[in-house]
Length: 258
Image: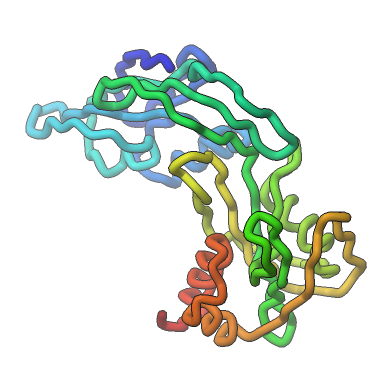
């Protein structure tokens, strides 16, 4: 890991730095999102560590993502950019994950070794049937040796967008096609040791088609109302993190107090 110093003098500038890193410096999240979209969804690994305004009224040191730069209210920004590959010793490289030891230089200047799982990312979808019920699934998970309630999900294939992923997984796992997908936010599934990011969606306009389960998938359809799904959460019978987040966000959208 190499931290390279850089000066970003005007908040609205876009800086191209070595190692393919791009800093999106803007006054609003909307501006940043627009620039990321123009680059095809490219995400930076940038950290701003210090900033001050032009009148020196405010000087502060902090570490946060570039997406939160708007909170600084700064004209002059100095920082360092993580612009080169992290030294990594690969221990295992599989079909789904890569496991390795990585050396990271921390914001406090110390260097440490971390056991890290790299993952291509995933997406999950909360399908809503025409009658308003949620099309949950009951799936066998060998890792814990039991069937669990969850929503359809899968990992991103090469070149596949999260929306394309959930459209495919919805058909494969449930046998339903959706007319519309609405973004429901994202989550880091296990940020302490894995970089998997899961993008969440709501699927509506469902019509039945043919499912296409993998040989190692054991899935039963489990349609239920939102109230029934939230009861499973309250009883401790629904523990899957992506499903919990999707349900609670959907409940808020529907005006259900939790």
